[in-house]
Amino acid sequence: MSNSVKLVECPRERLAGLQGQIPAYIKTDYLKALISAGFKHIDAVSFVSPKAVPQMADSEEVLKELDPPDDVELSGIVVNEKRVERAIATESDADGGFPYSVSPTFLQNNQPDARRRD
Image 1 (cartoon, one colour):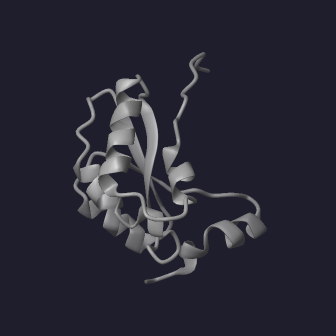
Image 2 (cartoon, helix red, strand yellow):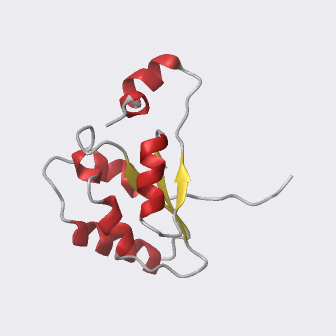
């Protein structure tokens, strides 16, 4: 068993719920500031339906503008095959994360995109 702890900063969660569209360059600048502050693991974007989470509609653009150092891990949430394809198309080094819960109610309420094909 490892004695290390991996801390993951998750600005994606905060950004996704904000009202009004925040431009991609502001999100990118914020992520760059987190990297400059020393964060090594950042859950940066989400590849979900732009209809479901409009704030994450520009995830590709945000990742395109980032060039993190090799020791920084970025990740993006994907909830179905179509979103995985969207993430892969960015050609970034970001990891894909699939959020899962053992609670069917949580999944139904928080991952409606997992059932979508749009």
